[in-house]
Image 1: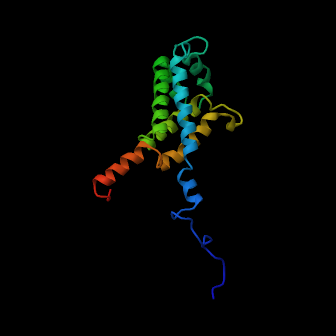
Image 2: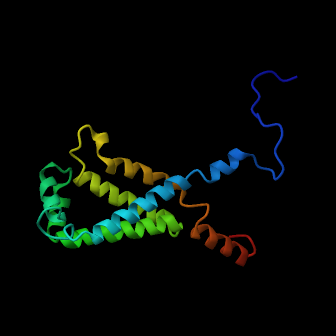
Amino acid sequence: MTYGMRMDTRTSRPEGGRDWRDGAGRYALMPLRIFLGVTFVYAGLDKLTDGAFMKDAGAGSIGDMMRAVRDSSAVPALVDLALKSPAGFGYAIALGELAVGIGTLLGLLSRLAALGGALISLSLWLTVSWASDPYYYGNDLAYLMAWLPLVLAGAPMLSLDALLRARRRRGSGGYA
């Protein structure tokens, strides 16, 4: 007779060998992937289609926004770098957001896409939203934290990465 706590709480498994928690665990990152992917695609397209945003100066321009946050940012040198070519920086951010969002939604190079999203969010947090008080009002920090699980786990389900991995495994006899 054994005394103490029982470690295995599942005594029976449904047909197919997996219970609902296993399935839920495999798909747990999908809502985050969809949210971040859609949000970054939208943010990139919004910047690319906003006539005022890509200008060096003027209401709603990237140049004026960067000049406004320069003295309150954590890394003024990063803002100074962006101010050397505000429109170029604006295009880099917009195209980066678009690439990250598409890669995340498709699950293609998903860890790299997530790392790109984390780096974009980090740079925006250290520049644009650094002065938010209290700190949790700055949304870029929350986006940075949201990217980290995808950096670590990638897109193991419903992704081009998973499809390519499965093809490589089949092509090598299942040992890849």
